[in-house]
Length: 244
Ligand code: FPP
Image 1 (cartoon, rainbow, N blue to C red):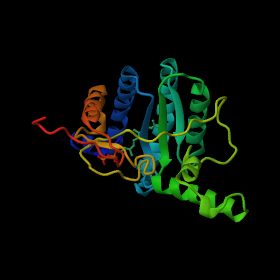
Image 2: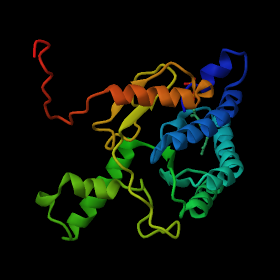
Image 3: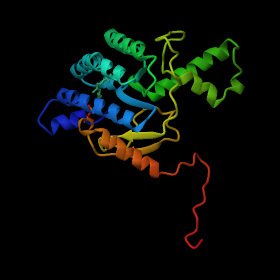
Image 4: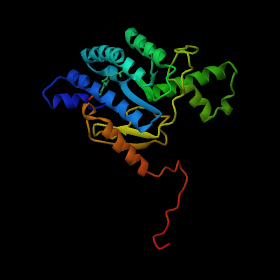
């Protein structure tokens, strides 16, 4: 959800006004994803690097995330959305963790879109956590280091850096699938530590709109662009010769 600060500054507003303006975009994108029949949407709300921001902005973002969750979860619930949280508990405000957990529990049995809120999330730290979990298991002889597969690491990524054995809802937390479409808004053309492992074969789509200007149409156009791509996953597909 990038570009809130630039959107605000271009209007002579403070960065926090930009974050506030992003709320409507969030709701419209979720509605547009449901209309399209998407099964998963992951939203990058706060990265493990965002702690470097000025303390006042971090404080605002913590409080604001909490109020967005409180204000929007009933709506998402009524739409059949299942909300899950990916990210680290460390440093997150306990009140934000509480709201995330309550939202997960409230929506756990919903059959519709899964909305993966990435709050205090970082792709590298997620991979490092999974590596640490594998190393621990190898150290006690539960797994053979030589036999570790990509699947073993992926299995330990799922659900982010959650405390082992922790249960957040009536249904087990679903595994985060590989990313099909990676949509970066705001004109930046980088991945910024988001879902690094899961995006190995993602189709990247970059659009100029700043997050508060993003709506379902931006998402739909990105999905059209995605549908025009040929996904080969490292394989080869011949293009027919024009004369044939
Ligand atoms: C990036 O814009 C935006 C953020 C770091 C915060 C986005 C989070 C919210 C709006 C809260 C929603 C929370 C939940 C849990 C749903 P930026 O400040 O990097 O913009 P810039 O690149 O223009 O400076």
